[in-house]
Every structure is written in C-alpha cells, then in structure tokens.
Image 1 (cartoon, rainbow, N blue to C red):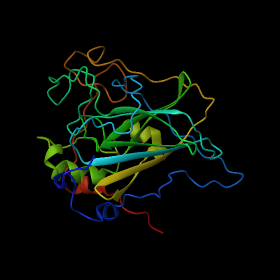
Image 2: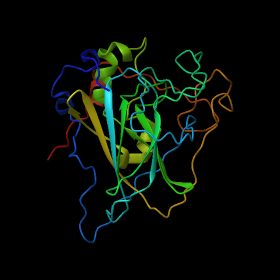
Image 3: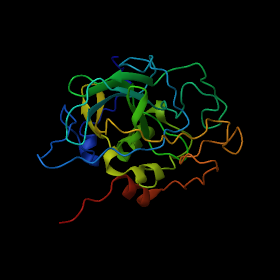
Image 4: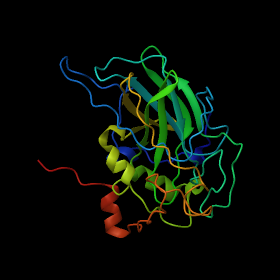
Length: 278
C-alpha cells in the first residue's frame, strides 16, 4: 500500500523530539546467559475480538489512514524464538470504530457488522518474527490508543494483550491529520488508562519513522506451555448498562466514569513526561 503524501505527517524527527524510542529491525531483546526475560503482561481481550483466522499481512482492506507496520518478535523467557505460532491482531480505525460490530462511533449509531477491516492473523517464521501492514489506530472514549493481539499455540491462546503507542505521536496525528480529527478532545492518555497502567512496561510499543510509514515494534515474551484464563467482557449490547452505552475499558459490567480530558500545561506534561534526573 503506497499512501498519498497527505496521509503522512511532513515532520521529520517528530518521534525523537517527543521522546518516542525506536528499535532495530529485530525487536527481540538481548539476554544474558543466566537471566530470564519477564513475560509480556496479559491484558483484557476487550469486547471486539473475532476469531476469523484471516491469514494476511495487509489488514487495511484499502482503508485510509497513516500507514503503520506492526512487527513482533515472539520468544520464550530464555530468549529463544518461537516459530509457527499464530498471532492475531485487531484494532479500531481512525475514528475509533471496530469492524464486525454495531453500535460504533461517538454516537454509537454506526454499524460495521460483516466487515473485517483491521483484523488479521500471521504465523511466526523460523526466527519468531511476524509483521502486519495496517494504519495508525484512532481512539474512543475511556481508552488510550491501543492495539490488541493474541499469540495462539494449537487450540489455545498463550498470550492475550494490548500494546500502547506514544501519546505525543498520537496527539500530533489526532490534531493535525484531518482523517483523525474529532469534535472533542481525547479524554484518556497512557498515564491514566487503567489497562495500560496495570500491564506496565512490557506492552509499550517502540515507534520509529521509515519511508512513507511508521513502524511499531515489540518483543512478545511468552510461556509456550501457558494456558491462561482470558478476560473476555460481554460484547456490545450485552451487559454494558444498555445498548447505547460504550463498553467499559476494564471489562466489567458497570458503565465506567469517563475521565476529564487534560488541557493546557497539564496535558503537555502528560504527553511528554519529564526525563529522569541523574
């Protein structure tokens, strides 16, 4: 997919200026002989997963958006690559809407039932690597910018989680790119999203610029023998306090209290955390 120039921010060095880290082509971490890597944190599946097994690298289906490659390196706690595992990826579009479901959009009045955009599966190669061609996700009320994924071995998932993108880059895209602009300010940043805070550092994606796209990379450290219980909240319209209510970010049955969007200096500080001294 070759994007039109209008979908790419013409701002070289944006990520470095905002402190978003970049990784080399391989996202797999180095490992000392006696050290074990921390497992990637599990997180809620969310209400919008569909087990479609759509084997494809390009998941856009021609959807417009800022091009993004998502590259995972899947390994065990000893740093050994894990080949032939299925990885599922899914996320919302530039306006925060998921394919396959009704009650989408800020007014909860749009339906994308029967659609499959921004969903796909790939199998890890001999080096445990897998990649997807997609677009930068948007946002919806009560959640920070995130991308869902699963790592599946055989008939069960060994990891279900979400990863999170740099707030400063998201803010730039959401305010400067017409396709992503909304009538209201994004209300939830990484620093206040309960799911992101609970999951911690193992699910913070690193992003860098490449020609005509951004690239997000993340090492997925999994226990191939794990059989965790998946947190699977009800689907929209089934336990969210009414069909018109948005899904709760934590996966519970109560409608969440929406955080108030930060503004001014407080927002700038949250978007670009100060560097540690010393």
